[in-house]
Every structure is written in structure tokens, then in C-alpha cells.
Length: 251
Image 1 (cartoon, rainbow, N blue to C red):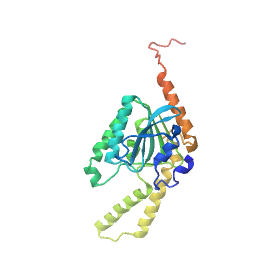
Image 2: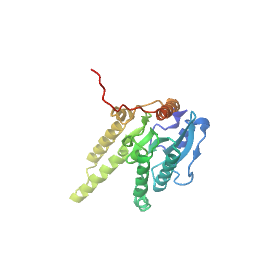
Image 3: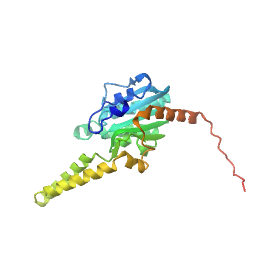
């Protein structure tokens, strides 16, 4: 059913617990601080018997959600539980209220936690992965053991509409400073060009071609792939390395 859970348009809201229910054993998910920072979903489950901690988003990362995710990562590190990040976020929330609530502080705490947690981490790009939200949810820059994308996933500094809107605001402000009326036709052309450019470059197959993930997978195969990844991680950590500490005397 996973192919029908995620909307074709990432702007449509989706409850990521519906995704979790189709990935984990018996759809059993134990949420962490369910009513605190509800836009950030954290909890424990099993995938083919492998205990995992799952973090995902039902909206932007806000101060409470970032703080909750930080606590959850710390708890997983203390119990040695691998982490699965399911990205579906437009980024960290912006605005005066969130800044006054400590968005920068709590966001930095989350980055510090996921960067230093000594447990295996796997990331799956399910929907939007925009702005610093890509970092806060263990994007490529933070070295998860594995990172895969679904075909409809999008990765960008911001959404196409937001980027076009921001540049239009800048252009209108520049025209106002010059004391000139804005050129509506030019603004419309600029908006269309920016939107097309962002949508093209944020496509999962484009970003995968740039090695921003380890491949694009069929959502219906996700559970089997995740089980294989966590089995591979567990087997690798159980092996004892025997490094050679002397020169190789081969001809």
C-alpha cells in the first residue's frame, strides 16, 4: 500500500505514521512524547525483528519538535538502538515566534546529537527534504550508513514556489527603491523560470545522479530493503576486524 500513501504533490499533507504502519512489524509503533512537538514523530518499532528508533515529520521542524528529536536520539544512543530517519519536511520553521522560542538553539542541539550519536543511522527521503531540514533529519552531509530515496522525493534549498516567491519579493523591493513600477510581465517570466529550474533540479533522479543518495527505490520494496540494511549493519558490527600492522612483502 506504500505506493498510494504518499501524495504525488509533496505540498499535500500526509500523516507519516501511515507510512510507519506499513513498514514495521505488526504495525506496532511505540511513540515518544506523542503530544509534545507533534509535528515531529519519534518512536520505537521493529523491522523484521530488528529494533529501530524512527524519526519523521508531519510538518516543519519547530523548537519543541527539535528538542524532542534530540532527546530521542540521546536515548537511542544510550540503548544502542539504530535510527531510521524518514524525511518529509519543508525545513525548520521560520518567524519571530519560533526564533524567540529558541529555534536556533534547539535545532543546533538536534544537529549535535545526530552528528555524535554512536549508533547506525539510515535515512530514507520520502517526500520533501528542503533547506536545513535535510540536515536536521540526517541528510547526506551527516553520513548515515545508507540513504535511499523514493521516486517522488524532492531535495532542494527550498521549494520551487517559495524560491520564486522570494526572488519576486526581492525584485519588487528593488523596483520600489528605484521609484519604478514593477514589470509584471518580467516578474511572471522570472517566476516561471525559477519554478521550472527548482522543480527539475530537486527531482529524485537528478539528485541521485549527483550521488546525494545511494539509489532510488520502489516504495513497495522499502520494508525488505530496510530489513536487509539493518541485518547488514548488525552483521558488520558483530565482526571483529583484524587490521594488518606490518608491510606487505609481495613482489
